[in-house]
Length: 185
Image 1 (cartoon, rainbow, N blue to C red):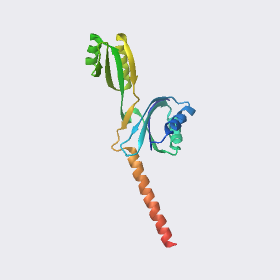
Image 2: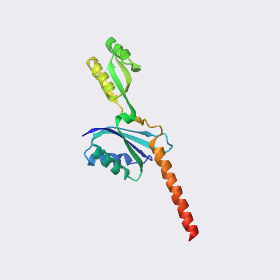
Image 3: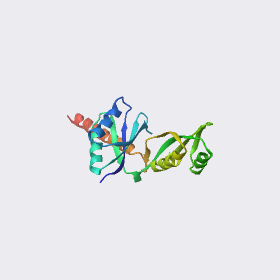
């Protein structure tokens, strides 16, 4: 059964990696509903946030394939209840008193006011930004754009930190083991 998944991919910021990652989804006929990239909380590491609707088996397969890319450090999968997620939408609407009333009633931020139009910003879940779009449509939406989903996990720490710490512990153990074996030889 298909459901929504939020996939986070951590990597170095390398040219061509985005293309490699999206190709994994394309080759498996999985549509990317949303994709954002940005720096992460860890210096030098970038985070891709990818939203898809697919089966649990397919998402596991996607993660395994994405992690085979050389520049990918680690990939994690979340369901919507495991993350806090938002997106931003911008609306350029023909200016009228009705529009200005809607803007006040829906807690949106006004970015620009012109005699002919008003540009507003709404932050929220996709359903919220879409609902405002539908309310504004009768008044003349001239332009509309919505960002991709941005998300942070509800876990206390970023899972990549835990992965990197475990990787470092294993590396030190292997190094100590190798040093002991070399000394005993």
